[in-house]
Image (tube, rainbow, N blue to C red):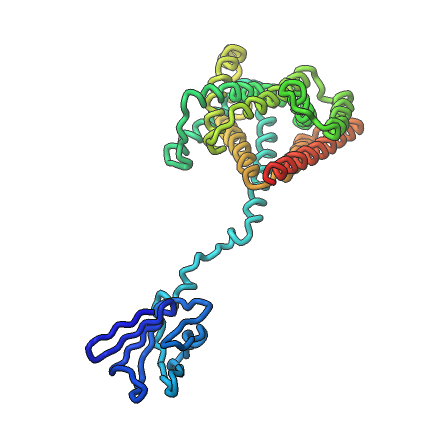
Length: 414
């Protein structure tokens, strides 16, 4: 509490309460006058003292819509009637200054659900459009270059406008990312070779073996001990893929081997990714990997498919669907490829690994189901059963692995 004595007037300020009392005449027991009190701040919870008397905070906040009510303050044998003045904007608008919670912040699951939906939607559209292109333009190496090329242009434009801001890349980071990008390029190209050679559903069934290769690499290359429960959960995956392969109507060795090489490539990509840990955000990281992978994919496309494309490849495709549709299909398949991969990464950042793992399994189910419906692929009963068993095995494996990883994180945090 501070008190200032002026000529002919006494001004008393209630510390913390923000109440300022001005007396026209010096205050005595014989001379009591009406005074005004102005609130200039919030009142603390414990009350405040004036002249040895304690004021309750509630008394300092009483207001009336039309006229402010009088507040009686006892001082010895006399009482002082205090008329509070309207609170200042600082006090009255304190609640208005609080940050308002938006609708999306209040319901974050809507954003997460939107990410999952777009991830599934773009992935399904990509696989369907990709296969349609291969039906009239069977050049997977060139199409793989288009996938990465469109994505790289998208990244460069995004950097140019600052969405996102480009992260710097030093020589050490570049050396660490090159093995990751090479494995990414090899896995991408071989996946497309398989898509062009066999049914989309069969390629995704074979690619469900990827967890088996990941576990094998972790155990025998990285020296990490894989729990027995994880190995047992992979048995249905191997059995299911074997059953589906034996009776797949579109089976050929090129498609099968290419999908298997893709599994191995993506496994090594995961290994090198762990060694190339960086603080760079996922959007910039994927952009740099795409740029490097593009340069890796261009030479084999020129060597293996360049002469065929020049001689008759482009001409045949344009004759079948026309120039406009041909260029449009290549552009959009590249956009869908980049965006669904980017959304998969963004979704992983928003949810727990377990949720993402389950979502990844369901995504494969959606792709297989929609591809069968759209292309009218006929599958045998054994192939259908085998595919279902493989997907179930992947789901169990993903659940157990994510649960083990979560337990490890909780143990470290503890």
